[in-house]
Image (cartoon, rainbow, N blue to C red):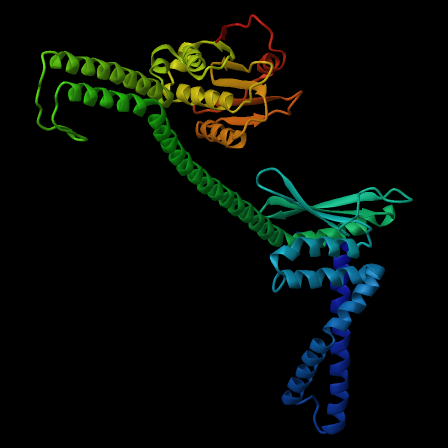
Length: 461
């Protein structure tokens, strides 16, 4: 990269100053040689070597004063800026921590050109810009005379990694300030590239940690849900099925006892003695009563099994299954399903996800003056659904989390709308294919909020 005009002058003057110093030292050495060695025509070789060593020592001792003097002659009041740039570059290449590179670069750029505001921006790989402003509370709008903004691009390996931007109030000096920023930007590319890579690695590490925490939390919720469902099924078995079994057992034992059974234990009948002409009729009556109770237990068990997975869902689809759920649960819901149900029926796992999500969401609503509304819109690539009802049910948070877990397991999204007049709306979209596409849900929102009669497909319990 060609040197700027100020850099050429700086190199020329610095070389001339060193040449003058060397001439003076060798001149003094020549005078001393003629005085001390008057019989010789030229200086001894060892004396020339000593003079050269003195020149080298003087060069080393006067390197900083000569640079300061040349900078003052070439740059005037900008000489301090160049000194700050050199100091910063030395720190960036040695001891400056990564987190301090961008703030130090912004501060150096601002102080170098005597600017009231300086900003260093990094171009992240995801397209976002990460910036640091000096002073930290500085804003782009100046006071008094409107400042002029100049900026230079910072590149590394032929790729732009960021930009340095400063405000200048003296337009006449902007060309010199730009050259000064160029001097700062050229070696800063490697440092900014390192900072950008560090920030991106930190973001990825944070994203991975967030994902790991979410997976761990989801796993805990799955385990708790499993335990809760097992406890619920056991409780429903004890409440719905076991009473029939107990009555059937009592009927069998009673019939056998009245028929002359000598001994009855919990494991069955051990030894029987029939007495009387009607003993067989009594035993048969007991067995008939037990058969009625066993049939009731079987029906209760079938109803309980439908709650685990309704066979009607696999046979008739989502809408019919929701009707059956309303009848079993004893609730009235305004259900509207639009679109081609055969498309959804071809995705059995997704259809089950929607069914249990809707049932869980409807079950979490509180009884209100207006019955809940459930709207399902089956599209070509995704299914949008929503539930509107009275908020405030106990266990609402747990139910919503269960619905969210189901929806997100199928790559969908769920959100809860702002409550209006004690009516809360829950919406979700689930893709029908692996590719997740976003579609408009304005029609769905209108159905949920307005709830007009005579929808595209209307079923109520």
